[in-house]
Image 1 (cartoon, rainbow, N blue to C red):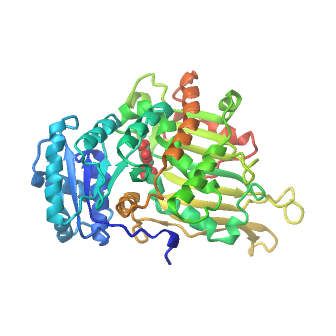
Image 2: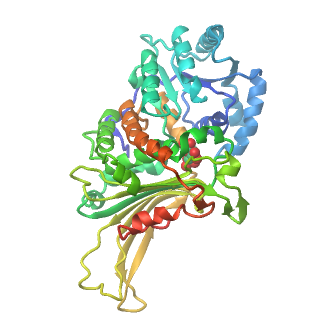
Image 3: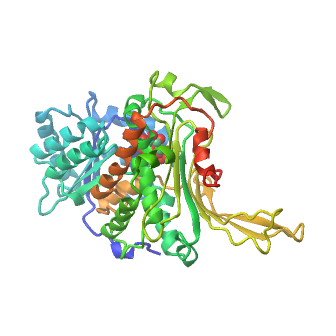
Length: 500
Ligand code: BG6
């Protein structure tokens, strides 16, 4: 069944994909494996080629050899020599210093030659897989060299990785610059969480199941919890992370995007504009954080040393920067002030070096009156709907039933449709879906400028508060589930984080 009939994309899919940052980590770990898996599944367009642009000195063959080694490490599918051959001959390397105007002229000539070879009418997908400091420089050079100019027969699209600005002010400046060159419809702001299977599935679960959607409100839902927990630390990205912290790294984008999908009203149809309009309304309805709310409803944390999977790991300050005030954990409680959600708290948390590596959404339904079956000695377990994003993918539902063994007691039954992505069908990676969508011109799973702007308004206030506040860090051990205050946040409301 086509789940998106209102939104068939029929444009010309032939394209040259130009990756700025061709030798970088993102290209190695995500983009090239995604392209390989697309060719593996026979989903790459017929007229298509890739130009990796980087500052290192290399020829095409050397580049291909280098990324092949990385591909072997990161591809979800086995490497088939024949398929790799087919893909590698579509991949080219172009050396360019991103600030060198003359270099862009050379790049333009090279791309035009490839247009002829691959019968591409000038369609371009410019992917900025570079440090954010280069976003503006590259876009301005694309403009000056006329490479970004749309013609009657060709499209030009820009994919931009996060961080989209460091705060509202810098995001607005960046957006202004991009919009001097690209139309809003041609700017694809990637939030890779939106490409994950279960995130895409949220709207289907909600709007294709009467049993869920009819209960999807403050009348029946007690609270909603979203946890994005990671076991790993910041690795080699300490420099970036010191500037971002968990708030800018995970909340401003991934977590708020998930909140907006969980809480939005049904769109009038499935076009990107209709969906984004409803998501934006959610972001604009999140309660404004007064100083009181900031103090009571936000918990910042930073990991100290600890043990993960039996191995000792250092604390953030030892790994990245002594006396750092950067948060590697954040938990928040807030309300969405609209008719559907007023009074139902949303609790969200994310952190690095936690004891569990998992992303899940827990919908806790309200309890029935404790009259018939539930008395002092029998506790009523609530109905829980859990949307498992990773590593397990699927849905879990908990409901009450008679315990046949004891004849009279109530037990909670657990229905779990989830599977590990490795175990069943090898779930496609987010980047595969997202790259293909850009080639098709489908922006549903990308953040609009309005959404980014609304998220920064929320994030700025919290970050500013966090930076001003004197925190006694580190305040949680690596391998735990975050600071004690995160548990207290829910305990105060007589609730608890459900285990993920
Ligand atoms: C990125 C963050 O956006 O998402 C990283 O910058 C984080 O810090 C990553 O580790 C998590 O993504 P995933 O897909 O591994 O859950």
